[in-house]
Image 1 (cartoon, rainbow, N blue to C red):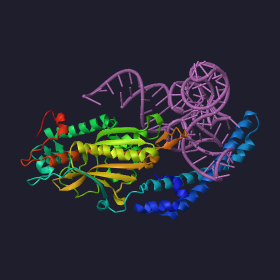
Image 2: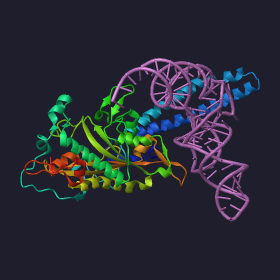
Image 3: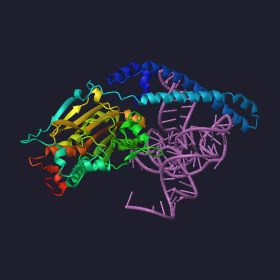
Image 4: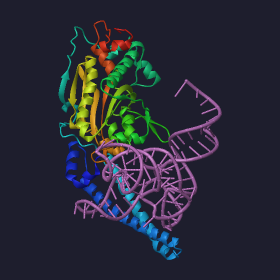
Length: 422
RNA sequence: GGAGAGGUGGCUGAGUGGUCGAAAGCGGCGGUCUUGAAAACCGUUGAGGGUUUAUCCCCUCCAAGAGUUCGAAUCUCUUCCUCUCCGCCA
């Protein structure tokens, strides 16, 4: 959520910022609503004040044993007026909140213009793309004889699910272990385990609701639960409605969870293989920091994700997303894209975003700044470190040999019980 | 799932219709005293919002929502959560 004060003090800038995101903002209608809000709120509060004063008078008169009937008569006509005014105010406030909840975050000024992923800017390139003396296979062909099974998954569930058996299942687990160990032991994160079903408030807090309900799996319950699309949701919401003490800042969490996405808008995209699934494993990094620290923390968190790719010796590039490709809640996002020999393309394996105070305002997540003694909104930052399913694909494809074997990367061997080749 | 007890400020905890945003204690902050510190004493100490240049002032918030009332932390209803016992269970 954007700061409501911006709408009152600098509406022109709001218009300009939202236009950068191609968000159609009717500022004239908004301003009219805002003016109405002001009038109604002032009137409501005056009426409330009047009611409070008169009620106190009645209380005092009664305490003295005076006749309160004349006072009661006076106050009669207030109830209706006040009630009407309060209802009107509530309606206006709800309308404004609904409007503002649907507005995307402001982009960081460094974010390049552009409409889709073709306009993203490469800012770093790491590793050597492997050159094979044979036709490289993709993970589907490589996995066929090794326990990567889409048919069984389709039978048990549906398309866009995968079953992993034997060494491949273990390899995915090894990848997750490596990530968790690296982030806790070397990057200073605390590991955390969280629920995979969350309530609507949590999804509102991180910005998936109300706008992106179609991307989520909803579980019929009263009240409804949703399967998490990313660990970002439960982990970030830890600080919802919390004022974090300065001594506990920054908060750094690493969390492994499965992620569930309906992929409603992705019919026909990436239908082959396990690039795009309804369920996948991910290790997520989340930082809760002060506004002052947030730029630095975002850079660092992205590097933490990059370190995993480096350890696995997987070639990747780092992209700064353009305006059109940056997510709703984010002000600035780096995508890490790993090289997939089977597709001869770089594909997203991590997305690291700085949400600034956008999620924090929705969540009322604050920290107490010792300099002012006052609660201030935190900044939230998160990124995949990394998506484990896609990491598995990347390893399969980059570490293949002519016979179709997959070699285990050096750093994973200790997690694989000595297994060198699958 | 059944029965019972509860949810009050950073924490403990009082408050069953009328200046209660809320006693008291602890903690925090400021001060007196001290070479310094502790102890003692004094003062201060929630969040959000409106208005304002600012102060003042005003509104809202005692799990959440609805209701009764001139007036609700206090009464009624619904929901959620926590604890205890029983049942079931990895």
